[in-house]
Image (cartoon, rainbow, N blue to C red; front, side, top):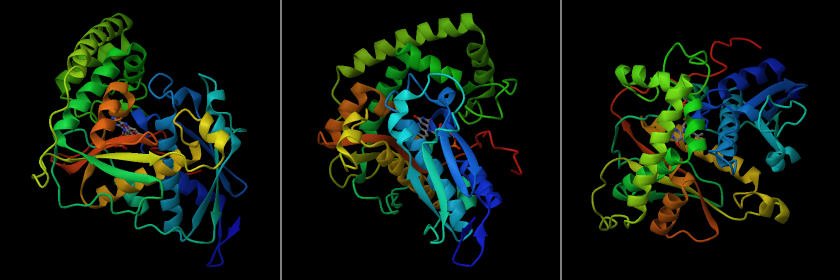
Length: 372
Ligand SMILES: Cc1cc2nc3c(=O)[nH]c(=O)nc-3n(C[C@H](O)[C@H](O)[C@H](O)COP(=O)(O)O)c2cc1C
């Protein structure tokens, strides 16, 4: 137990409560790749190999960002109790390559250890914000008057804006890349839950409701996720169409940028960019596939979650577009558009705007867990 400024101590039950709030953190494909245990006054976070996107996230970028979003959410929960959380990355965070390809988490190898501290975490956000925030995949109306970069970003991170016309093309190029890489597309299909009959519909992955699919489309597509023959035929078709779109779009330059001062069309499109390296240890950074120390990417995930919570507070929602940073063609075009230097890494791309329809809630493994 840890004594705090008000003389009381954070109990393991308090920590479990914070963990339940953090369970609502966002993660790529809603994989929820964390396995968390509360023990002796600390929170240990391990990675679940079965929940790591081997094909779609080979650099562990999305895994580390998701862990960061989880940590930020836990810190918000701790702050509501007037406490802080000291975050300590373990050596296992620098050795994600050593994770097995399949299986459960190894609880003896946490990647992060969080300990309650007396100094309360300063945040404007509440556990209710963490619970209510959600991404929106429908129409986003423009909200040009809102500054989504208001929460100060840590040194080395920047949010840059990309124009609507370029973004449409980059998203198409990225989607074509995802569709045309069979292993990436198959992995995405594995995390789709298009019918309530899916055994994991209320647990994880992306449901037809979250994707705002009309019920006829979900009924038509659901068997593709369950029946091997349909699944294989759909993936073959996706590869063909994806390759064709990619070939056409790669050959065309991006549309010209808008004139300075031109009115904003569509939602804002933002790119979280990190500068390499904010060296903790030179070997650590050089070894990492992203060219960034994993702990720095976790910090970037915390900042990303703060930005998304800030948007939520302002009545906005975000639509992430990781396909733009996954596709070498799309990210190359994005880098040229933004004039990024070699030392800068685009970590996340997302649109922000005012949702014009309700955003359905996504499932979580921790939903329905009321105690312990
Ligand atoms: C690092 C990261 C990358 C993501 N990339 C995408 C993406 O490319 N496309 C998408 O639709 N959602 C993306 N998401 C959103 C997740 O799918 C979403 O957080 C998850 O399904 C849970 O839904 P919720 O955030 O509404 O609770 C991403 C989330 C994170 C944290």
